[in-house]
Image (cartoon, rainbow, N blue to C red; front, side):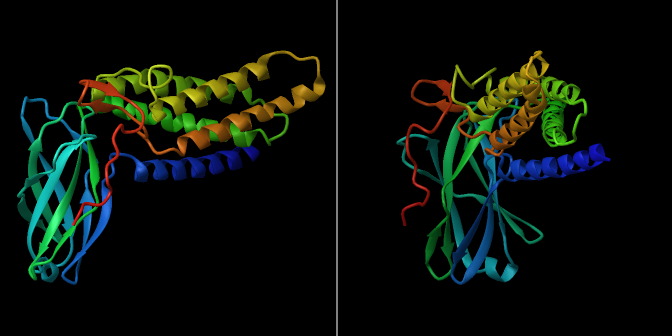
Length: 300
């Protein structure tokens, strides 16, 4: 029964972590509320864009605005402004096209294609029918290459089950004198496959970089995987080494709980934090924080 309860709790914690990662990950658009001329719009700004396989020089960027037909009539026009990020470029204005899908107004503008890991910062300027204008907050969009679905799905599944087994093993340390080392070994194998085989494959396809964590870079996604893996290796080794101290042998199983908590902590960091970024000055891909600060609000 202890095993059933441990699995149930582990599943709940894992699903909560998945929901958190999904809601903060770069695949999810940035949500904003824009108000003008006594009208309110819910805007969805993409944060990631897949580069097409052809050699197109421009790519469409679509921002969705949700509202009612009555409020749309209070808008006279919309302009999209963009520039490379980070850079000292001047913002370029683009007059977009519009299409209506149910209660969504889709604003589509053609922007220049950027290299893999290249970024732009952009915002919308809404022009009200009363002559007023309002700017949205800046959003940052990163370009990536296509990743084969099979590799991406396998990567997600292995990381998911690695987190699940990690959480279960940590909880199961309280189950008394039960065999726990096999679950720790499964966690290590899943984490290694998902984070150090499939993970680099995904990154190679997306940004043409195998590994951008320590010691080659400061990508937090790679680094947090490395921290979790090394913590589990240390806990497993210390649980397998024979010790003469009975007290130490009794308590060392709780090292797996420490490893599970470390894994939860590092995976609470949003995905792609300080991730790969194209440096427009050197023409190389770097990691870490942006080298130039960008305002979050456009000047009126």
